[in-house]
Length: 342
Image (cartoon, one colour):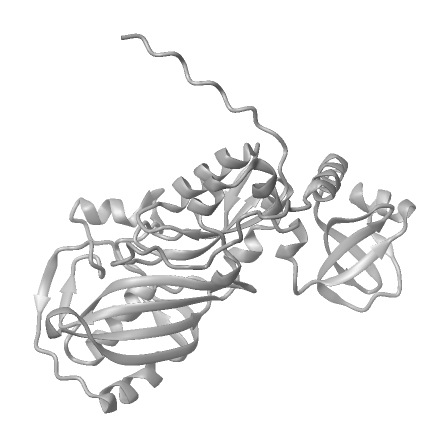
């Protein structure tokens, strides 16, 4: 039987940020490619991976927004997680093989005793089952081959750690954790380390990213909702490119200085020293790029092209969401059982 070739999707320039509530079982890249296809976007990237068994906030950048995606990679994150006590696995989560089982006799006092040791600046050894690379090869590839690679502990910061004891299926004891942390934190490892400090071991069974930077899960849209929308409704879900720059000082340039700035030329003014500046033009009012100011000079950083600026303006002008459009949803996938982390 001969099947007709699939019609090629006509790609188009799309600029902005879509906050996706990544579903259970999807890799971050699979989710990105699905949304890219739904939007028919030419260029896209995500801002820090979530493993397939994790859900929650996954900012997806399109077009000009990809130039500023590193800002979200560096942002603090927040998670809600569950770790089952008494059982260690080869991966530190529910996907691995059980490698140790120990009795659990944990009290609230035990939790109060160990939590301070995992709060504030700490050092954490990355897990073998991670995407960190050694000689161009991901650590998880070595792990699957049974090879242990020496890893150096890294400095991270746990800004907030709330831990509570919970009973789960068959009377097993678990801990629920609310974590706000710096980039590079492995929640899977945090759960394992807390389990060791409690004397019984643990592995992660649920993980949901609830915030990254200033973006929260309440702002996210699900894949199911996106699939039910028209193309115009999907475009209306996009935040503008400068949504990635909430903590930047704003500088606005007239048309002559804006043109020179976009050519990479420094501008002089009475600006105080600032490390993060978002630069706008006046005609039209549009983001030109980022910069920093030193000794009264505005020094260009990442710049949009004139074409990107024009396309973004046209897109925003047409992004008036029709009445009755599906709303973004931050609800958890009802199938969510076991989650994992970045």
